[in-house]
Length: 419
Image (cartoon, rainbow, N blue to C red; front, side):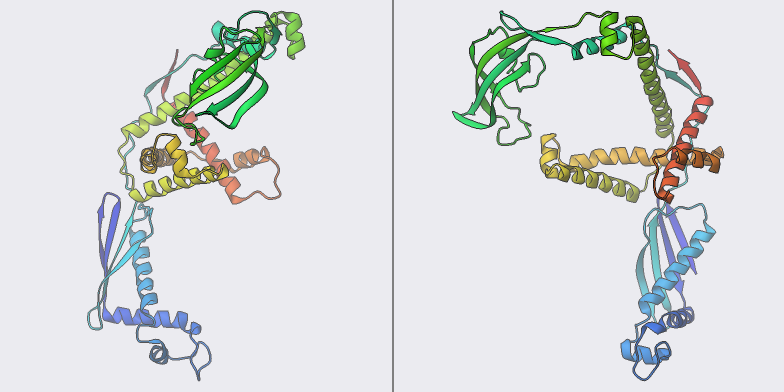
């Protein structure tokens, strides 16, 4: 017999097994495990229980019998409470055990508590404009011109956006450092390719000028031996080159793109921008709807789930650092944070992610949203060919279909105002 107490995310079951029930349990365990014991004079699996206990000790069946009753109690509890969802392994504690009184033990574990969804239909959300503006179109066209720009040598002082060809030697405290020397290096002024004010100090220089460039390495510079240190670069300007953009006309468009005219290309750019903005605004809208539901639905998230997700995040970061042969502590230091602070930020994200998962699942259940077998097969057919489609592949595809259907349902059942 047992009773239990549920407090938010924690379940505690208190069970009592009489001495008679215990002995019956021992007999069952003996019958299922006797073949494991080697006893001289008996064929394997035929030694009496008493003989096994004499050879291996009176408590030889104790742990397995306790596990038997724990499992039995837990199954009975879950059968009586089918809506409860354990999210942690059960922890068992032995309270007392005597031959006359039997045994008492407790089982504790965490559950995902029941929760009530906030109102999630009949609401109003705003979707940003997806129309391509003239400024956005001009910006894309300017990139095309920049990509096809040419640099021509000029006999004048350098200015921002020029390219200067330089030789340089860098030193710290008078000692040249590794990687601080180059010849015929092309540097676009204003690109911020170099540290500190390096490029600014080459503005106003002409071919043949020799310049002392004084800079300071950033405090968070990846190469820690240089971080925060002052450096001197001896620079020789070997050439000043002006950027010449091509003329935007039909000939240039025909040579540089798959289109024939400027108007055709502008139309393509506008359609591309609109398509990208449409995807971006749809994503922002979906996030806004989900954020609203998450923020307005009260759920107490079990600590077990949070801890698991945080550790997974830390493990992924550690693995990423190893790929670049970097220690996680050094990486976090370069980002001006600590492991504790990183874990804290992971906790905040974990709570939100866990809430979102359970909320979406509840919406699926409430509205009978399903991924039909035909839909799954059709989606699997579009995936890269593999020797074998695994269960994981099917789950991944099914989840993707369900997510698309959930957001389609939410957008269809709420008022969306387009700017």
